[in-house]
Length: 178
Image 1: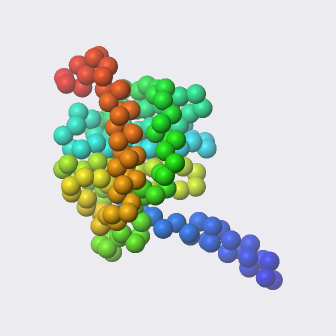
Image 2: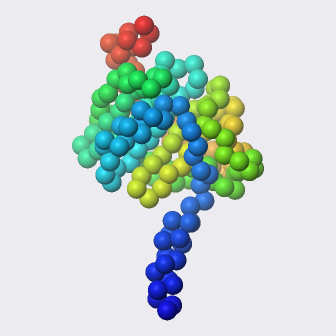
Image 3: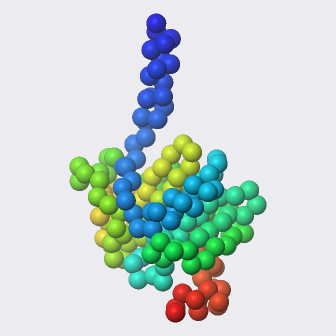
C-alpha cells in the first residue's frame, strides 16, 4: 500500500517543487506557441521581449545541436528566421537563479506579461521547467529580489549582445525600419 501511495504522490513531489511564478499571457504568444509546436523535442526555448522602443516585439530562440535558431517576431508575424553560431545564451551556468520566484510574488495574482516601458522580459522553457523574469525600471509582475538581479543582468547582457550581432545585418535593419 505504501508503495502505491508513493508512486501516486511522486509526480506531485517532483513537479510540485517549482517555486517559480506562473507565466500568464504575453505578446506574440500565438505565433510563438505555433513555432514551438512544430519544433518540439528535448529542446530549450527562450523568448526575449526587448524594451518597448524596439523595432520588433519578440525574439524566440531555440537550442539546436549545431547552432541555435531564432525568429524575430512583430505583432504575430515572423520578420526573420535564422541561426546563431554562438552557444553563449544557453550555456549561462546560473540561469536557474534568474527566474522570478514565488517569494518575490507579493501581488497575489498573476498579471499578463505586458512588458513595461524600459523593461525587458525573458521567458525560459525546457522539458523540466518554465520561468520568466523582467529587468528594467518598470517591473510589473513581482517585486525583484536583489540577490537575483545580478544573475538576471548578466544573462540579459549575453542575450542582448547576441541580438545586436543579428541586428547588425544591413538587410535586416532596412527591413525593420520600413
